[in-house]
Amino acid sequence: MRHFLTLKDFTKEEILEIIEIALEIKKNLKNKIYNKELAMQTLGMIFEKSSTRTRVSFETGMFQLGGHALFLSNRDIHLGRGEPVKDTARVISSMCDMVMIRTFEQSMIEEFAEYSKVPVINGLTDSYHPVQLLADYMTMVEYGIHENAIVAYIGDGNNMTHSWLMLAAKLGFELRIATPKGYEVDSVILEDAIKMAKKSGAIIKVSNNIDEALYGATIVTTDTWASMGQEEEKEARVKAFKGYMVDGLKMCLAKKDAKFLHCLPAYRGQEVSAKVLEDHADIVFDEAENRLHAQKGLMVWLDQQRDK
Image 1 (cartoon, rainbow, N blue to C red):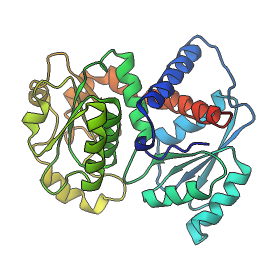
Image 2 (image 1 turned 135 degrees about the vertical axis):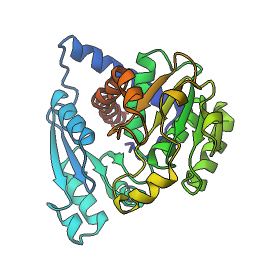
Image 3 (image 1 turned 90 degrees about the vertical axis):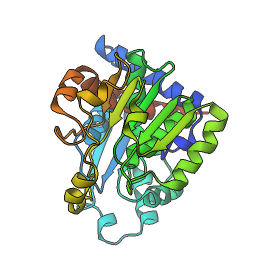
Image 4 (image 1 turned 60 degrees about the vertical axis):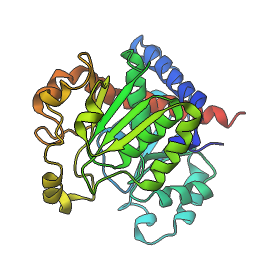
């Protein structure tokens, strides 16, 4: 049995295997071929953080695979009212076939997985957002921009940045990160990525210099400046991130045919200009749709591991 808590736990071959399954599932869906790989199975979805894309994609995905998804907010279960994580894990994993958790602390999801009898999926924590990176890379493959990719990430050193670090370190492409001073990536996660990069051949560059990160990039990506739970910091962050908006002038530093990605929600006029987002709307919203397909591929792959 395998859990999906961070891309750090997966090999390059395993990540590509999941993407391959996802692409096949998407192709079948577009051709109205519905294979019920998870028929009669139940996905327990625990949400301590609210969501649009995560809930809709997992719930829809489980239905299309022949199973059922059960929404559990921390207001509805005892986990939100003092029950130990390990007890909730023991109970829910005895009744569900798989569990997806969207929460704050990475340590919470790791403890849950330790006591779970079924696969646990990280739907987002403050440290990582690995399911989003599966969708991002799947989109890169579909658009033929995954080979020799040079990815420039502009913005906050957050869970998205950490997940890009893990993906680059595993798959071996070049990743350049530019963050404002005081908002850099976690030093321990960066150190782990650099160690893994030595094996994969990945090039990882981290700085506060936007122009250096963007120059010659084939893919430009960013994220909101204030994530969930950081609302009180919003005003300070807007000041600190001044100059870090990806606009037309910034995109001109990247390659002429560079693509822009965004995990959404996007705040036009902050981390990205309205024009850049609309110019790249096709790929950005394909990327959003691919959350559905990538996560179906992941759930099918995790289910297959139980039979090995």
